Amino acid sequence: MNPLKTLMSSSIFSNIARFIGLIFLQVLVLNNINFLGYINPYLYFLFILLYPFNSNRSLFLLLAFLLGISIDLFEDSGGIHATACLVTAFIRPQFLRFSFGISYDHQTLRLSATPFGARLSYIFLMVMVHHFILFSLEMFSFSHILLILKKTIFSGIFTIILVFLSLSLFSKKYR
Amino acid sequence: MQQIFNFLIRNKNNILFLLLLALSIFFTIQTHSFHKSRFISSANFVTGGIYNWANNFQTYLHLDEYNNRLLEENNQLRNMLTNLNVKDTAVVKNHLDSTSFSGDYYFRSATVINNNYSKIDNYLTINKGEVDGIAPEFGVVTSKGIIGIVDRVNDHFSRVISILNSRSKINAQLSKTNHFGSLVWNGKDPNVVQLVDVPRQAPLEKGDTIITGGRSLIFPKGLPIGSVKDFSLDPTQSYYTINIDLFNDMTNIGYVYIIENVNREEIESLEDIDE
Image (cartoon, rainbow over all chains, first blue to last red):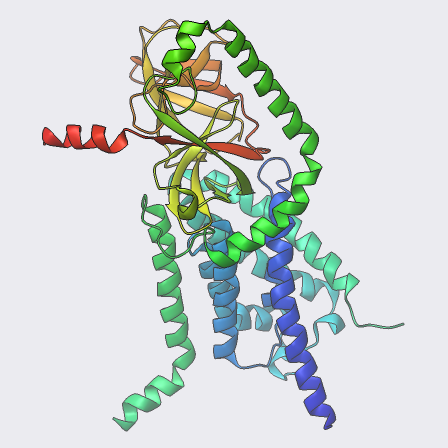
């Protein structure tokens, strides 16, 4: 078989597996953590962080929406995860360009090969925007702005830690 | 025409984004209007099935506690039974279940397969549905206190609006006197709810018991809710806002009873005559 084709299909397969695996992990395990009463990590967002950078944009938007709406189905939360995922997926190219600059423009970007600072800024920006939209829509009122910010920051930090842990756990760098 | 197509193709991502965004915001707004969330709910075949499957594992972890709760309840029921004299039992036979409430209520048991308490608007999913005779507006309780009200039903699962939901409003009163108010939640502590609009004249003390008020058709009067933790007067100085420690541990519920008011339709048709 054509090696490029094998690579393609393995990437499709791993993305499908990640999509389903992360939904299950989120609704069956992570939603039950409730650290200090209300802090939950939203690790399913890893799918949007890791989705191939140079792939079809429309498909990516559609997948982000599907991912969000699946989580919403389980959580009875209407469309808040769908909205948050969709918006972050839409503005991802801007964040990629901001964090990685030239290597994104030249389509040679591999997340595991980037400097730590750039990777942190990309993940931090994406996660914080996602969480902020998520919690604003959940509360749905400006009078709760302090609670929204508190939840965004604490849950965001929790998510970022878990994202880095899972990145190092599943990194393909063999030494 | 050609130009329109070119425009659509050039902006297809933006258009797709706006379409999906409109759809997801539509879903969000729908859940924020009471009793309107039709499409997205955990009481459907797929999500209900998965939660049911996962719950089969989780139940084992809490078996001890559920058993203890059942023992306690059995104990209480046995005490009540021995204290009843023969005359009373004859009367009791006319009732479908439960001797302590006036009016006819029918109880069913169910298992909680999904329970939220960390959000502002929390819901539970239970493993009984239309097939088992459940309908919206049935009350949900445990032996220790109230849990919520059934909201949406499909064949085998139902969704329950928890009392830990900003849109839940349940009539409750003091057990000593008949001063009543509305039970709401401020979204902070899952084991503390608020009773608002209690008139200033009510004699309040820490530790007083709060029970359901029986002014709705959902819960019978006298079900336990919690005890008074602290209280303060609201800005108008005429009503109390009371913090209540729930008797239930809302983070660990397990098994529940669903209460059907058998006379509901009759009462409702009577009340409709006025209008």
